[in-house]
Amino acid sequence: MARPEKVRLGEILVQQKLLSEEQLGLALTEQKRTGRKLGRVFVENAYVTEEQISGALAKQFDIPYINLKFYNISADIVRLLPETQARRFRALVLEDRRGALLVGMSDPTDLFAYDEIARLVKRNIELAVVNESEVLAAIDRIYRRTEDITELTRELEQDLGDTSVDFGALAVNPGLEEAPIVKLLQSVFDDATQVRASDIHIEPQEARLQIRFRIDGVLHLQTEADIKIATSLALRLKLMSDLDISEKRLPQDGRFAIRVKNQRIDVRISTMPTQYGESVVMRLLNQG
Image 1 (cartoon, rainbow, N blue to C red):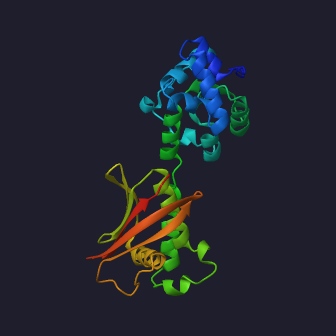
Image 2 (cartoon, one colour):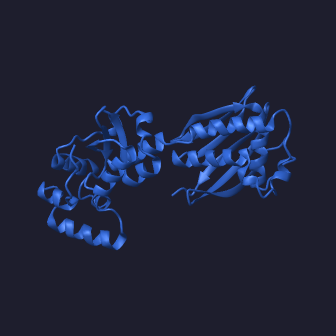
Image 3 (cartoon, helix red, strand yellow):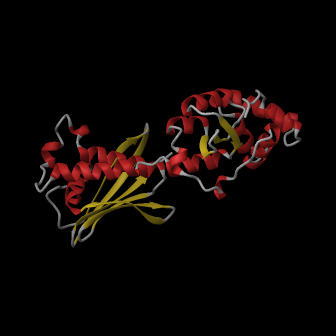
């Protein structure tokens, strides 16, 4: 499709009688004061809904409006656009139509975003309108750290081999941030925060270690790994929480704080001895 013309969202909504001139003026004043996107100001003040904005944009540009809640999204296709740009531009690559890629954008009036997406994917693009909240939810689901976590568990398994590791010594090693166990835990916290998990469960089983996330009250399996890394993970987390690493027969509770994508997360940790080793449950708090 041709590059869209530059138009103002407020004018479109006024023309389609979804917004009054007075509401537009109030929203523009608030936008200047807060720096928020104008569309968010409209929605948060209940002037219009996301669906009304998307419908108006679709009508203005004569392009489809796609409800992502009912759309079969291909993760491989979506990843043609890097996560950073997908989040920045509120955009998802939805289909490969041979001659062009179908890209869903919450704001097709953003010509800079259109040009950047076309440059990054190196293809012609066709546009559809999607709701911003649905784009962000889809990004959280698709651009996850699952592959990284699986690979890091394998790296840690190889690193440990059949030997035990002195994590007390590792705790004061200045190069620790590059250790597989630290990179694994950072990836786990990154992924848990991205999907808004409330808890992380690290649970040794008879032959495998399970890492599960509690999302909206339901536990979901994130990954499974060799049981031999279970002790190492528990020890590292106990060190981070100032717990007694020599005590493995009694439950312990502690807390620590981490930073994930410039956001402080407070973590409450509980360890529990089980038949197959120490299980760890972490509650993630203060997520913005």
